[in-house]
Image 1 (cartoon, rainbow, N blue to C red):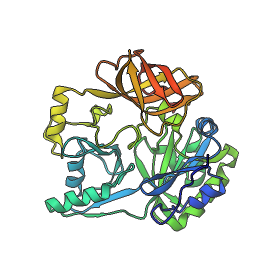
Image 2 (cartoon, one colour):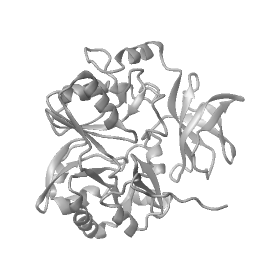
Image 3 (cartoon, rainbow, N blue to C red):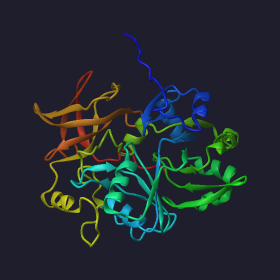
Image 4 (tube, rainbow, N blue to C red):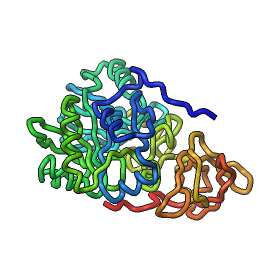
Length: 373
């Protein structure tokens, strides 16, 4: 059997830090927002342990920003999400699921309020800019929409604060979770958020000048040597253990926020106006027929979950696994699964049909492991 390769072209865009990934011997990529996103450097398990114990530099330039600016910016952003953003402070980050007219999940970005008339949506893997343009121009809102020249760089792991303090100054320690501040790197001002797609603690730097990328990553690399810094990337095992959902894998446009356990981000009790409000209200009233849960799978190895794995109970199909890996800490397989009503209770026994054969499993709450920071 031959091994397929990914043909890279202008449609699979590089980032200003692609050179760094290659210097650090990246071994696997995926395509995310039409861009290259590293998925493995040494091995998934070795990268996992290093992330939990030390500090990593991640190129997450594929985490594109949709900039919404102008007098109607707040109105447009609010119309896209059931989360109430009206009291958001300048510099605050808010997880904000976006829904369509049926309540389906369009994306699940972090919304950053830069000022009263300017927002960034730091998006997952779908074309939000085109959808936002359709909404804005269809209604006739006074906004400007664009994808700015911004390349997020994440520093993740328990030593991330110490590393950034060495490069950006002690002010980084004062940034609260899901808040931002502007910090100086030599003669350049950078927006820094205490956030990131791991549960190990860390920051995201919104690099707004690709020309500064090499200088910044070089400074981080040099300052991080005593801290055992490495190149890294979002880790499959760690994100499943932490219950972090992946848009396109664990949820799609066919799912609504209630199925995805995102009830707390849906404000249906007040006067908030947004697309899909009536649809979500109807879904909430009747209840959902399926929901994402965690599964512990009796397995010490699992193949890649590139297609959903059927889940059954007593021979009857009840749902599917959407993401899976083996947890070195728990000593078993861990998975996120969309299961039908009546099969959500803790320790509920099910069977997962993996490509390597059936495996016994049990339902459990997520996250599987509590955050260490």
